[in-house]
Length: 131
Image (cartoon, rainbow, N blue to C red; front, side, top):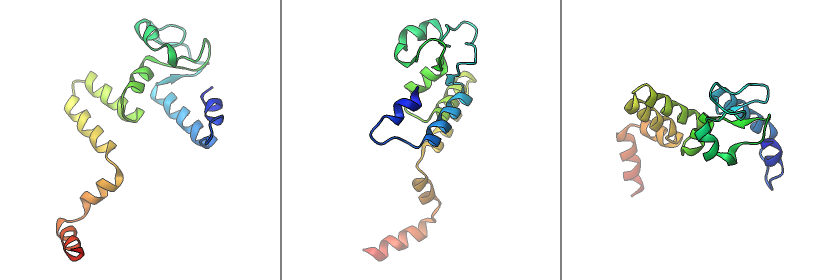
């Protein structure tokens, strides 16, 4: 399992963090549990036929948890899974510009977002006092 693999790393993450990440991925529909049947049109791993041949490395074996077709798509995006799902849904709904704008806001580091809240006068006066 992913938890066992991560536990064997030199600097393993806390077990609670791994469990939370697994629950988040399950809630997003990126992975399926052993108890959940695959979606209609998918193989026993929950992958669409074309995704199954392309994403063999993501599957963890028959009857176990596995990456879904959505999970395979999310894994290919360079954003957090929830932001990726929002982007994909935005594209499906024809709202690409709005989804991309929201993704940019969500992906912005908090320090940068907080810096944008500082009034320009306060920022310029503090930089002029340094010089």
